[in-house]
Image (cartoon, rainbow, N blue to C red; front, side, top):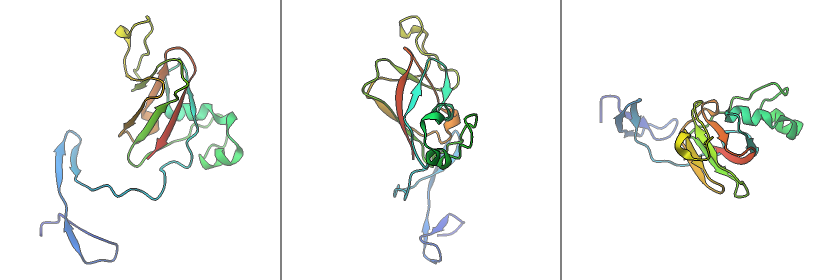
Length: 160
């Protein structure tokens, strides 16, 4: 093994292992075996309310400010109700629409559009029906947007 494509197995170890990678649109991705993490990427994961207004996950957490205790606000770094937290994940976000929801939640970029004509013909985004979930490999909550069709819908999330 030579050429700089080796890594040490453990800190302080002299044992080297060769690493591999693959080209993609965003550069070179290292091939890895997932071994889990010691903790969640975010200190807590409050259930948020998705409305008919397009909002990022950060903005939805901010909207929960009045429902959070002082300790939970502190854990998220939220010092005031006008503060928008910056939430990052190491790997991505697991998102789940509560089974008790009555309508659809759309997710995507800031350009999402929940169905407005009663059909999906004019809709833009990925649909989360009541009880459904998705894992997305976006690591910055500010870049994940939501909009509901019928008003308030509940969303659970984990930053992983």
